[in-house]
Image (cartoon, rainbow, N blue to C red; front, top):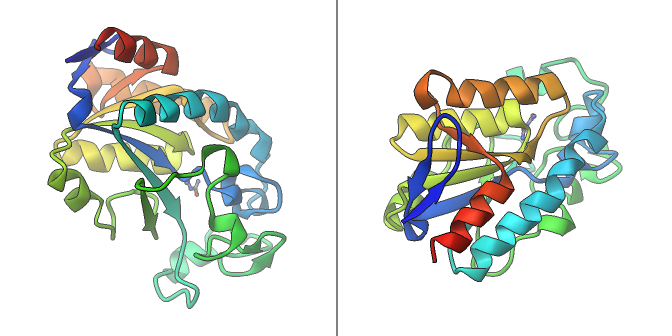
Amino acid sequence: MTTVSAEPFEFVCDPKTTALVCIDFQRDFMEPGGFGESLGNDVATLRVAIEPAKRVIEAFRERGLMVIHTREGHRPDLGDLFPAKRDRGNPSLRIGDAGPMGRLLTRGSAGHDIIPELYPIEGEVVLDKPGKGSFYATDLETILRARGITHLVLIGVTTEVCVQTTAREANDRGFDCLILSDCTGSYFPEFHQSALAMFSAQGGIVGWVTDSDALLTALDKGE
Ligand code: C5J
């Protein structure tokens, strides 16, 4: 077993039944010219998560542990896009419109893909999802249960949107979730802090929070 120093108390897991879920590290959220920027966000704020996330992904790969990548986006015919989502925020460019990296948040476009720094390798699950949560309208739960996964380490962007929604969905399904504060990022620093505080408040009402160093130290010790 591996014991990770975390808030609100130690997170204990068997790495073999723990999966790393890398949420929406997509060019559309993290690079100029994508969906995130079309909503008026400064995408540079998310990039601090890349280096620590890379170290954690590599640690899981070296140990042969499960790594999953998610991508938020829609079918090219936008048949899975609710008008409420398309119109929200009244942006200058909407989901499905052409931007500098192809159609925004649309499967098959360059912007929809994962950033090169954190690109999946062969054998890793890449899960396309139309919503914020990684369980909504996907087969993630089936994939996890089939592998006997009981614990999740969550990293990705953005902390208070897709990471938070996924953590809550996972928690309701009985998975124990550890969120890595430095491997997640938000366009709004105050939302990042608040979301992290909400996860571990009330005795870990959504899950546990720690950082990449604490997890990597525990993985080394646990061997
Ligand atoms: C957003 C996400 N922020 N991946 N998506 O719209 O958090």
